[in-house]
Length: 161
Image 1 (cartoon, rainbow, N blue to C red):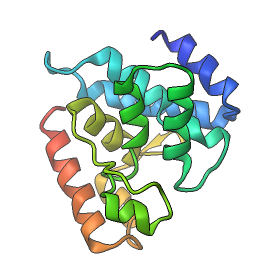
Image 2 (cartoon, helix red, strand yellow; image 1 turned 90 degrees about the vertical axis):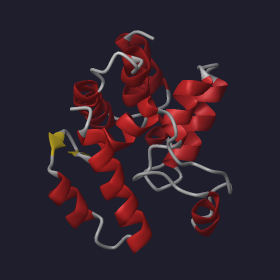
Image 3 (cartoon, rainbow, N blue to C red; image 1 turned 45 degrees about the vertical axis):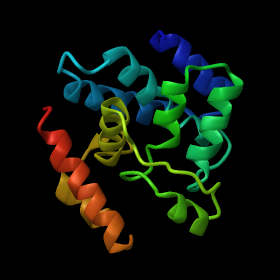
């Protein structure tokens, strides 16, 4: 998908210019991790641009689930849908989804492209890139298991930078 096609979908979904700017910043950072020939750079770009499409409807934790459903309704590739659905923190287990009143499904990033976008999103606050330490300060209220998962994802992704 071209960048403009993604931006058009974000606008169609009701995303603000602030959300669009954030998505562009996440895309820019994600592409710095997508240098390995095994990584589908086009998928990383489209997934990063669209990861917060659900914020056109809600800004709570449900935005990933809502965004995935929007992407499906737009007929987007399931690989993009998976990035949107699995980008929260370092992923959520089906049990964690259930506890958060989300559909109880496995939302753990599996593919490298999914992990790259989740990690890049963790490191972009608004449009500003923050450190891993800064991210962990923002995650202090999360359960220990989720904080550890964010750290492990960060360590894994730093190998690609």
